Length: 263
Figure 1 (cartoon, rainbow, N blue to C red):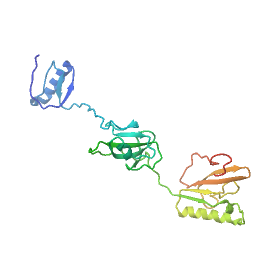
Figure 2: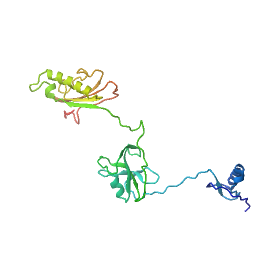
Figure 3: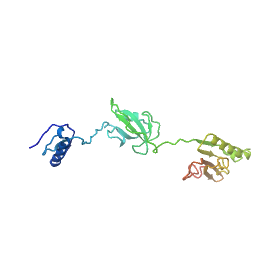
């Protein structure tokens, strides 16, 4: 086999056909002149600087059980199933590993909804994102919390008051002015608390029709009623949203069935 060999700074090993190898090697030699390179026109092995080769990552956690989905190339971050009442620390330890990090997933996937501690197990869910590591192997969390605009929490203030029907319906000795006073007080407390969403229960005009919170002083607010009628009985709940909120759709009524008057 005829070949011209000169010493060179070795880059990354790649495979090529003899024709491509010879051509690429000669181009590299011309470009690097004095630096030199390995030229073997009939050899499949070519040493060329600046060419990358993908690296295969071995599964470092092959013993993990109840894996619903792999979420990292090393096999140690997974969407774990059957997690009711279990923490990620429990999950990793059951396979002989140590917990590195834990998260609640968005929806049966590898996207993070919010982070948890390894010991948290109070969330009623069938699966969690868990990252484990073999004993004695240090690791950093492989997943990140959601960025702005995706999965963020929205902070808001709310106000809730169940005034009970005895006052609003002027029953059992309550005066008819009771509803007016309590309605105005409801609006005052809502404003004082700087609430953006308020809920009234049993502040009603009839057995199943909520009273108007707007008329009591929440001008510009949008009210959504949840009436529930059952024969002569009923119940009433209402939600009201501050002026900068837009209600796109709504629904409401009885809690479970037509005869269940709990709104």
